[in-house]
Length: 128
Image (cartoon, rainbow, N blue to C red; front, top):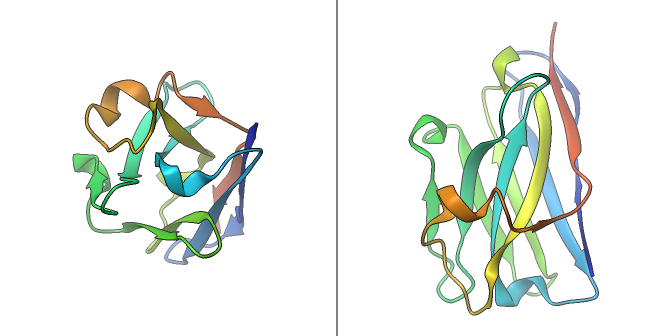
């Protein structure tokens, strides 16, 4: 049972990236899935979540506007599109599932992203 984030890289300020989250050993579609990030020397920061029941979304206040979360049920993938990247977006980005289990939603995301199952993250570096 594993989550794998991918799609990070080095990008110039103002650029964009699409991060992907894939699961192995379970069906990601059944779980509310979110993204958080962690920059060196800083605490984890919740970014966004997408529900498993109706694909409703949630964004942390500071993340509204440039981040878009989506889900492709056919591919069993969750994505995070980031636009207008800034140097302060530099961090390792992780996807995480709601520990409440299947048919979960984004309720209390700001709490459970710290404790949910996560896999290897993907590094996003924004620099000129």
